[in-house]
Length: 332
Image (spheres, rainbow, N blue to C red):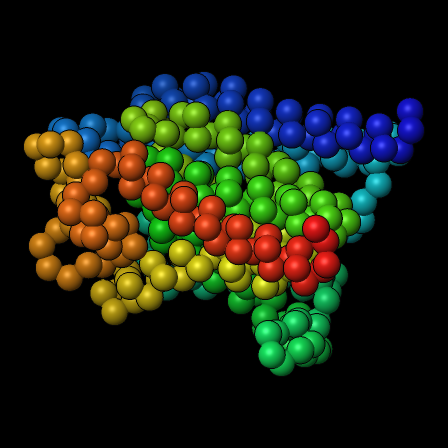
């Protein structure tokens, strides 16, 4: 088997295992979650039905099993990557998943949830993942040295995971926006030759694609913080080890906008009001999130359409990120 054949087979197998693990696991855990009354109200449906939550567990296992397959392929075939970097990434993602699971169970205070992901960055810090130099428009390359490793790196993990955790609450929006993010990271990783970032974005894409089948309107399961924190955490891991900080910054712009809308309102839950026409409307008073802003500007919108608007917004910034990458690297 030629090296290129090994690479293609390995990527196909990794994707398949991640996808199938999540896809098969979800219908198995749904009745268990219902039995244990681990449910949440679907706020934008008539009667606010109770839906099983903590679906992020299945997403995490899809990610984990896919990465374990990558390690097995490294051990038994000619599939090559930096094992130290990938292992550090796996540990970081596992810590983030544990934080999300604790929050789903214990409902951690917002301040605690904001700080804990800093510790998830330790595995990446000890191997000095990424490069300390970052390029800025009109300024050029700046080498942050040790500041990058001990301050910027953990901040990147914490900020990204919390940003994707906040822009949530509509059937399919978290997984849908995450899918777009990791398609972009996958493309950039492929052209830049960063195998470790490619593998992590591949398992994320596979697991989220499987998950959205069950989470799309009307949702059969909710992701909860185990998944929403993981999406941002995995994005940050890929960005750090792939040296693509600018790409990551562009991809989270919608989440940053949502953050600054919620900031003066102390990060409230930003649900809409379900109308008799099946549309959801922004509650009376001040808009408190990007979702509510879309509701207000549209004069009322169906939940599926709102999710699609959020995904289209993410596609828009994904295209900007790709254009920036290809122009900067002179690839056409």
